[in-house]
Image (cartoon, rainbow, N blue to C red):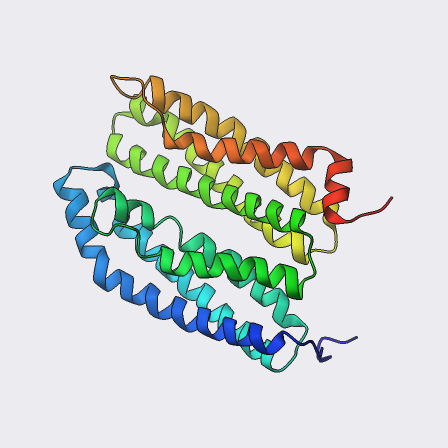
Amino acid sequence: MTEETTIKTKNDGLLGLFSIILGLGGVFLSYAFIFIFLGDILAAETDAAQECAATAPFYIPAFACIGILGGILWLVAGVGFFQKKKWAYSVAVIAVVITLFASFWPNIPAMESKAAVPGPWFLIFFPNLLVYFYLLRSKGQESWSKAWLGLGSGMAFILNFINAIAATTRMVNRIPDYDAAGMYMLTMPTNMIASILFGFMTVGLFLAKKKELVRIIGLVGAFMAIFAGFPLAIYSMFFSGLDASFSMFTMGPVVSLLVGFIILSPKMWNKIMGITE
């Protein structure tokens, strides 16, 4: 079949409708939340002398731009579904991964600053999460195990990026005291690269033909996240403050470790991918 081949399936119309709604909603809300909440979030964090005030003015709009891109991809996917194009599924997978990524983190500074509780970006996140499962199961005919693995690698994608953001924030607030900023300067780029690799893995699970390459990418991301994330979490808990306390830096490497453990075994990987030897 060529790229222009049409595919007649009973759920293309419904997926097209979902895509248009998620696309329009994602674009509109990404704009609206910036104008409604950004000022209040920044003012609240500045008043509380929270460290995020240094980087939130850059990261929150950046995530909004990514969210707008996700919404546009949803609109393109909707056109493809209504025209029964086989590329619509691929575009929709990329759209939902990007949108879930973009709509999770902004809720953290919104709730941390108490400017918006619960985080308004969950209005984008949760509908996309539901459609994620519907899209993979109904259109992609993917197994539940692969869908859950994709969700796990997607969370590693998000959480390692959050670690990179938090490391950037702490680094900026400690420079020029390079002794205090050193750990954050060291681990920030590693967590960022690990996040990007998990993003490629998440999309590749469903769209790539070379599944073993996807596994290799995931393993590299997992090892990077583990060897950057755990030292960062330990340093944050025991060496960066006066009192030992739990660090949210722990979540990224823990999820990455779980994903890495699952894909480490070739037999388990082949079973999840549906590969028969």
